[in-house]
Amino acid sequence: MININEEWVTGKRYSTMDESNDSRIQGRYEITADSGHYHHGEDLPQKGNSKEKRFDKNLIGVGLTTSDHNIPFQSITYPANKNDAKLFSNLIDSICERLKNINIQTHDLVIVFDRGMNSAENIKKAVERMHIVGSLPSSMCKEAFNIPISEFHEKWENASGNTIMVYPVTGNWYETKFRGVIKYSEATRAKQLNDWASNKSKILTKVEEIKSKLERSGKGRKITAKGLINRIVDAIPKQYRGLFDYRIIETDGKLELVFKLDEVRETEHILAMGKTVIFTDQKDSTLREIVETYDARNQIENDIAWLKDKLLIPLKPVYVRKDSQIRAHVFLCVTGLLLYNYMLYVIQDSSLSIKQLAEHLDQMRLGLVRDNDGKGKGK
Image (tube, rainbow, N blue to C red; front, side, top):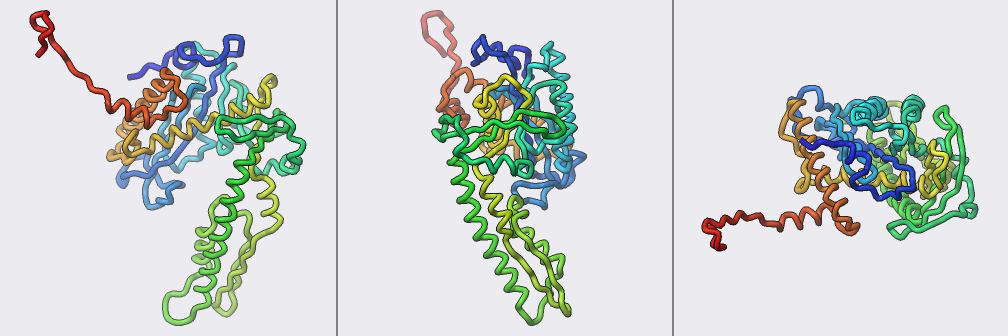
């Protein structure tokens, strides 16, 4: 069993921060839900929101918390039908209890999380115990998105070579006053514009196909109003559903679909592209430090992707069904991820990925040489 002691968690053993800076942990939290062979499981396997669209499969949820050096120090396994925001509240308690047991104070800890965990209750609870860095949903940022890019005076180039521009804001979000940063990336905006153009074309094509089927006459089972709505919903990716208006008109048993793109909402959607509003309770951090702290969460998203790699760290498929066995399987996978990331830290080669590290390790050979007579002749 790997013991995550104070040296591992605080970074005393592998700190990249200057000693003159405040020593803080950045606990990054991410969750995922994975399908597997859980047809006759216990409490953990449940139907849930499958990112792979496998709604026929039972899922388990996996939460992962890492240090600022991307070393996992906590994982949870939970039923996939539980609300993420509610789980986050319990996670705060769990993190604080774990750190307390190894005599680490939480008031200098910084936890970074995605907007899916946002709620007034969660944020209030977190701020009482540690510092936070999070982001706001677009629905809370309409005024911020109207600020012209020409007023974004501070900028720098990130590790990917993309220019990042920022603008400082403040706001009363989730019943608390926070500092905020509007982050803008032209590269992100270009990608999001391209994705929208592609998806918009696909959505309109699918809707036209659905309409054409309504106009057909003849034998066969006719589609119901509920079935028609379900087809429309399935044709629109979740992130774009608020951009369209649609309704069903039934006349003399015949269905008619009225479907249109709301141009005002589309304009607002395009205006928000490339922008993220990040908030924090930290008063002394620079705008760049806040943005880079939040962007560091991408590392844990990559870790989740490695846990889904069937050949490297195969979190799935899981051929066990009992809750205790599922948790043991997840623990072993996270332990493997911990060892890979710790080796990457020790090596200190930013160009080396977990996959490349695994390939190098596969080439290693271990042999036992025994010298019976002390003259170098081994058997």
